[in-house]
Length: 246
Image 1 (cartoon, one colour):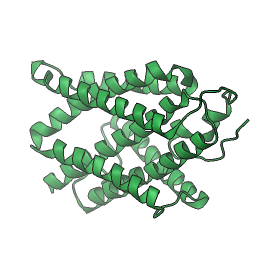
Image 2 (cartoon, rainbow, N blue to C red):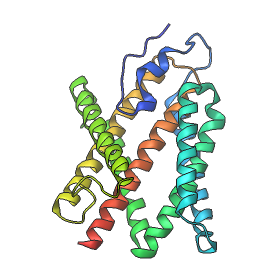
Image 3 (tube, helix red, strand yellow):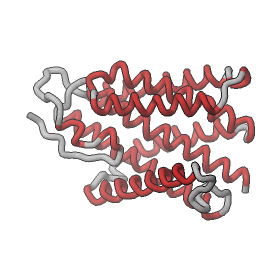
């Protein structure tokens, strides 16, 4: 039985996910298969986002976006605990996130024309840049590197969660949402951490495929990459909107 020894800051791609599965199956996970499933998931997200965007003027609002985002989280958790269902749950996750992103993107685009195209370009540009850097060996997922990114990602998640809780009391974490130097600096740091998550994800998928993870885990790999991609896109939207307000 192969033993997955790599870890990732992406909670959907941690080694514990793989430890539960039967690695005696003949059909194995491949990098190519994971890439194909990631492309399918991204296209589903984009197509759904484009469709809901066209409906925003017909009464679609943030309530739809929040509802879709919450259900997307539910399906991500289902995939985490039942990865054998990934062929069904991951496409549903992609569609739900498309609904979420479509409403959010259309609303922000109305305030800042051209911002969505800029954010999309920066997001995919960062993805391919990180992939090139990883394949060229410029950035290596060493244990120390992984530990640092995991810690930074956890800290960011805590700050956002704390800010979310404070929002119920009419306040938020000071400055991080502002368009001042601190707010812009914070967004830049988050973007760098999100981008570096790609390195850990690439490494985990590559190593897992090499060590014989089961075929259905390709959907888990696709989900992990999609989560990071969506996070990065949202952070670029936040940064660009702050710069427009500056």
